[in-house]
Length: 132
Image (cartoon, rainbow, N blue to C red; front, top):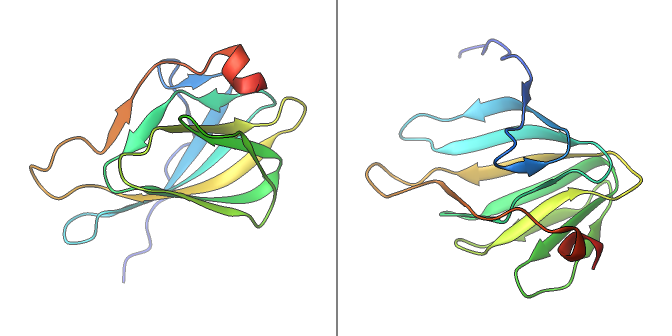
């Protein structure tokens, strides 16, 4: 058994996020495990850019009110206790509602060795997309 040292909280980079977003890495598995788990905190109106995950992603909201949208789909409201799964390769974004903070656990797997990129990042979500 290993007790893992807590890593410092990191600010989400501007190329991946709009607004103030902070995350704490909880787990970053090494082969044979490839699980990744982050606690992600979004300020009101903050959100990810469009992105997809090679192995899919699960979001579990722990506090606040959030929004999530798959490309071409409706914006869905997320509340504490809600769990959302995006399948491999599905382009999506997620973030906080305009007037609320939101915290979620982000859970995903890294691809196997030499299997390509873990997360593909696209363009920022526009205000019109966010407001829809």
